[in-house]
Length: 196
Image (tube, rainbow, N blue to C red; front, side, top):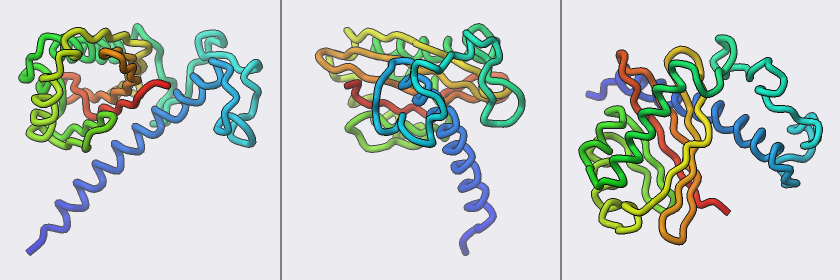
């Protein structure tokens, strides 16, 4: 017999996480695109109420960004959650550079989802371990450079971190979603793509 209650609870958790990730990613991408002055199709029309030159960042206006969770404002780098999330991501990068797969996996929650550019999506600790055991064999990983560009609170229990990495001839953009899991911040979602 199938436990429908358990399936509904798991689907609800996954849907909530994806909604949070989308809510974190979309505004960040739009703001980053507008701030860079790009003239892409995504920046045209009703989705962009102001032209890129009319846009101001939350830091310039002092008003902050509205939180996707509806609980106030998303705080810029320097707040407790954002600072802890930044520290976890830096620890992840340090573990990747040292080749320590146990520390890499330890940075993630038990039900984390990792979508690395060009690789199959890994869900959960065992899949993430297998993915990074394979990834860490690449000599470019130890020589990679990592730059954390931004970290923000998304309410009291969630934070988002954007970063860039250079591995050999490849440049990547990375988006981390983190959650406070019983007083300990963990990466719940990691998505990467190649920078253009």
